[in-house]
Image (cartoon, rainbow, N blue to C red; front, side, top):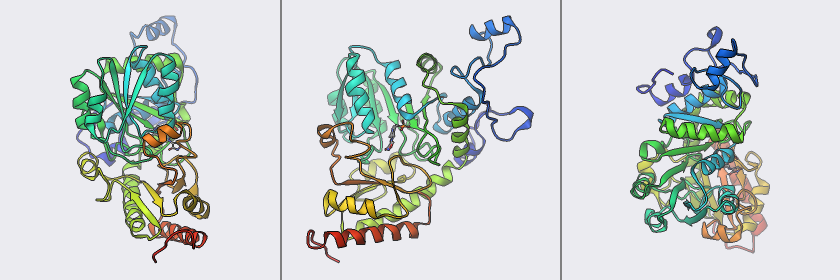
Length: 406
Ligand code: LCS
């Protein structure tokens, strides 16, 4: 791959991948093949021995997948990337590769629910212990580190609380103790935040979200800084088999081409909506990294280029009011997932973060009344109109039950 180091981010989005495709194709062809023919026995043997570069079998490497991996590595400023069958496949590949029985993990308390569950069930079963901390205060990470801490895992902004952790500070603390820093960068995308450039060792994304951006793929990716780590992860992926398939990789690569302009629109729309919600009399609180009222606003300003497309709110009527709102939206769709061009709304306590249990939710400050919004790229006036009519329904439903000052 040619170096695109000096090009602008949106140019990299359009041009990164593999330099030349067969037959002069302008976009990456979909190599929908499970296996690749060897010229002769000597050729096959040399590919298996790693003496020659080439493709053998799609679980091991596929050119369409490789083009997407190259593009994401370039956007994150990494050495190489590995496409996985889902964000959870990427997360479990990272844990299984880096950890063994007797190791300890320090993890942000506010992470995607199943990440907590994997650490508390599967990894625990294999003898890996985890301490969950509010990593928005880096000192909590320092205090939780033990002599056997192998991995510090943070998600920033965290799902769904949007708490921000200081990647640079946490990386320094972890490295003093020789721990590996893994950052789930799903909520920001490389257009807004590059954890590897801030000192982290490994980045992962759920490709299902902003990177693909069109709600039609489930996928994940791991980005690493060096060849040795790449080889370790490739071995695990090859053995356990959690790879992405060529067609999904093609779709993600297509989505990447508009990443920077989509993220700009997500940020603009979300900022307008967050500011509007903040003034609405039925809204108790709004959390959005672009609002000065966000508790970690300053850290965010330092480490990301834009506040992203995710907002959380608490209504004055708690969960009951949130239920009416989520049932009343017309343009926003009541669905989990996030980061697509279309706006979605959901209830973390009963949906995305149900599996982690009430106790872990309370520790992560995921309240019963929290409503999460993924702001799409529609006309913002239409989105605000939709939220306004849904909140008007809340007002009708709750009249007499909550104090409403309009
Ligand atoms: N990391 C984050 C921050 C996520 O939000 C998700 C999925 C994952 C990892 C896992 O990725 P997946 O395996 O689904 O590709 N988050 C979801 C959510 O908030 N709603 O539905 C899925």
